[in-house]
Amino acid sequence: MNENVMTKALEDVYNIVSKNNNNGTAKAFGVDLNAFTTATMIGEGEDIYDLLEEINLDKKQSMYDFVAVMTTGWAAPLDENGEIKGAPSKHKDRRRVTLLSIVDIKQSELASLLKFDDEEEMVYDFGNATGSLNIAMLSLAE
Image (tube, rainbow, N blue to C red; front, side):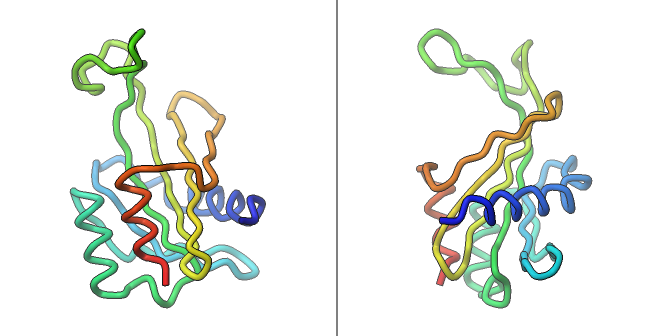
């Protein structure tokens, strides 16, 4: 995986689409990297997994280099056992967070960034993620 290409794609897409991320829905974008990055919304829904399934069934991803999905929510600090007690949205130290994941349709490679609203720094992951979102994103690859 070329981390430089994936980082540029993540940052470009984040800068294009993050202005519209506050309504609580998951959004999917078809992304092309040419002389400049373009991100076209190809779906939106309450449930990210239903959204990814709909995109895959309709093969909406087939004409793009990448598919990106963006979700927002609340994050809360973990306790001493590595768990969150209660809903993060109710925690006194909650923070608003955006997750942007992007999959290279041709190479079956996944990367993501996590951005807290109260910090400038972005946290990147290049193919180390596991779990159901990772599996659902990779199902979009050819």
